[in-house]
Image: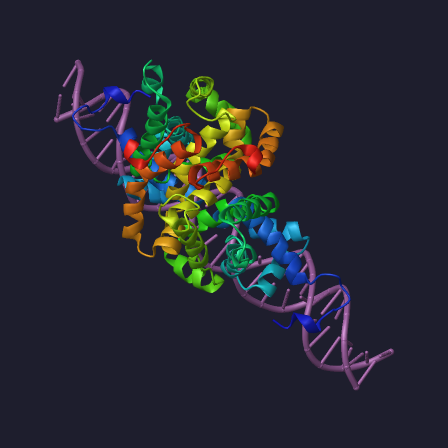
Length: 216
Length: 216
DNA sequence: ATTTGGTTTAACCATATGGTCAAAATTAGA
DNA sequence: TCTAATTTTGACCATATGGTTAAACCAAAT
C-alpha cells in the first residue's frame, strides 16, 4: 500500500519486481502449477516477502489475473472513431493489434481461458471491472453491413472469428508447429506472414467486392 | 494387464471405470489441478486402487492423455477418399466432425493445449504414436487449388484456420458467452447454428465462385 | 470347508507447499 | 550516533497430497 514512501532511489519497486516474476510464472504454469518458491526465485527474493507484500498466493494471483485480463480486449477505439475508416481498417487494426499483443504475451490467452475455466462464475465481474464494452465493435460491424461493405451475419460471430483466427495459431504453436511445419522456425515465420494472410482470409470471407491480395 | 480373467460378470471393468473417472477429472482440472482422491471419489473406489491398477498419477495421466490425443485429429478420410467429393464437402466434414467431437468433449482442446505446453518436447512422439498424418488433408486442398476450386494459399494455414474457427468458440465459451451473448443459453444456440455459418464463412473465404447461403 | 489367488481397504508415510514468526538487517529521521 | 520504523530472512508449522503396506475381503477351485 504505502510503498511510495520507502526507498525511492531504487529504479523499480519491490512490488513491481514481484508482480513481474509472478506474472511470468503464473502465465506459464497457471495457478495450480505455479509455486510460491518459484516466484520468489524468479524475483530473486525470499519467499516470505511474497506474503509480506501480498498476503497470499490467491491475492497475488488475483493481481496478476486482473491486470492480464484488461489487456486481452483489443484497443481499437482510435480506429473505430475515425469517421473515414472503412471496415477493412477495423479488421486490420484488430488482427495486427492481437498479433502484436501475442508476440509480447503469447501465454496470455491460455492463461485467461484456463483460469476462467477454473471459476467461470467470476467472468462477469472481470468484464465489468475491466470496463470491456464490445458494443462499439459490434455496432461498427453492423454499420458496415448496412452500408453494404460486408456480408450480413451475426456481428458477434464475426468478432469471435477474428479473435479466434488470431489467437488459435499462437496457443497451439507447439502442437501445430510440429504437426504441420515440423520445425519451429518455419512456424514463427508463418505467424509473421499470417498477420497479412489472416486479414486477407477474413476480408475474403466478409468484405463484398474484395479483390485480390494486391488490393490490400 | 490381465483384467480379462477376473470377475467377468460385471458390465464394465474396474480399469475402465477408473479411466473414465480419471478422464473426467484430468480434462477439467489438468494434471496439476487433478487430485488422486478426487479421481477415486469420482470412480467410487479407494484411492489405493488407482495405484494398484496404474502405478502412479503420471502413468494414469499418460493413459488418458494418449487416448485423448488420438481423438483430436479429424477422421475425415472417408470424405477425402470419395473421388467425387468436392472441396466444400471436405470443409463441411471437418467442421461438422469437430463440432460433434467438441459437443461430446468440450474440454479436449484445452486439455491437449495445456499439457503440451507443460512439456512441448513430447509432442513429436505423440503425433507419431497417434499416427496422425496431415499430408492427406494438405494434398486434398492442394488439388482443389490446382483445380481452381479454392483460392491459392498455404494449405496448412487453411487447416489452422478451419480448426481454429471450430475450436476457439468452444474453449472460450464462458468468456465470450458472457461477453458477447450475456446468457449461456444464447451461446449454446450460437454454437449450434455456427456449424453452418462457420462453413459459410470458410467457403466465402476460400471457395472461388461461392454464391449465397442458400447455395449450401 | 479350506485353500488360493486376486482384489479392496484403512491406516500410515514422506514430502512438498502455502503460510507464519521472531529475529536480523537495513533504512530514515532525530 | 542513536532510535524507531520498515524490510528481509531463515527457521519453522500445519496441512495436503502422492504413494505404500499389511491386513481384510471375496470369488473360484479343490
